[in-house]
Image (cartoon, rainbow, N blue to C red; front, side, top):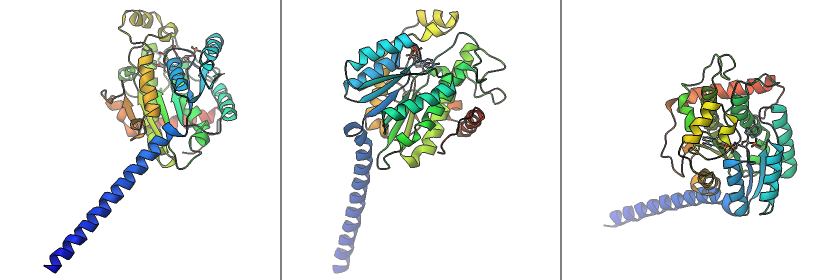
Length: 322
Ligand SMILES: NC(=O)c1ccc[n+]([C@@H]2O[C@H](COP(=O)([O-])OP(=O)(O)OC[C@H]3O[C@@H](n4cnc5c(N)ncnc54)[C@H](OP(=O)(O)O)[C@@H]3O)[C@@H](O)[C@H]2O)c1
């Protein structure tokens, strides 16, 4: 029947348009994710003077990326600069992440090294052996593990969003230790009043997951993809900064070499999968671990963003809007 054949042709036509649109959309997503691999390759790796960050920076440089690493200890930073710069395009900068004025100065130095940034890896941080209140009045664990990445991300937003047709990636090294924090204590978010080394560390690692979650939501329109990850129990210099309990625990723990989490970080930085979705939490190249309920609390993520912004504004930092 002519009517039936007309209907069939119309249906075929609609089906072809739908398939065409789907393929066009898929190609767009793939090409946006793949651009990072093929055309644009500038990364910051914080905490590159040791352990996981150093192994990650080395891998990215081996892959031909331009990498800017940061360190705190002058000798470790100098040694790393010599070692990795011999392999390719590597610059080492120094700043103590417990000081927001040093983080702001570091951002200025980064802006003078590059006009574009494809990947920002927030790896610097760790546990402390005691409560340390900084000159700026912040608690050192919270400052290094959360406030510094928060401020550095804001300071580098213009570099991360320079090309509106491409996406950039922000990846944070958190820890399964975030599970020991029973949520953020809104009466004392920094653990300034009641301090316990392990709990303060767990809270700071919970806070960085929440920051990444909120960054993923706010940054989506600007092409920012953000993920966090747990590196495992890793044989690094980590325990040297902790108390006796932490040193004993790490000495007897089954550990993996820093190259293992570095492999996941590099994969998140370079693979199409690392560009898909946002606000995800990885371990060993997979989402096999689900972060705690507290780490998936969007209200807490919003509140923490506001708290961190207010705190940094109080310290004289003006933050770009996202
Ligand atoms: N090792 C583990 O089992 C484990 C488990 C879960 C999560 N993590 C996380 O993994 C990340 C990397 O740690 P890692 O295990 O590789 O330990 P690491 O060998 O001690 O390396 C830590 C890096 O961060 C830098 N850093 C630490 N505090 C800093 C501060 N206040 N200001 C500036 N830089 C600072 C260190 O600089 P300097 O060396 O120059 O001082 C070093 O480059 C940390 O965020 C840590 O919390 C580690």
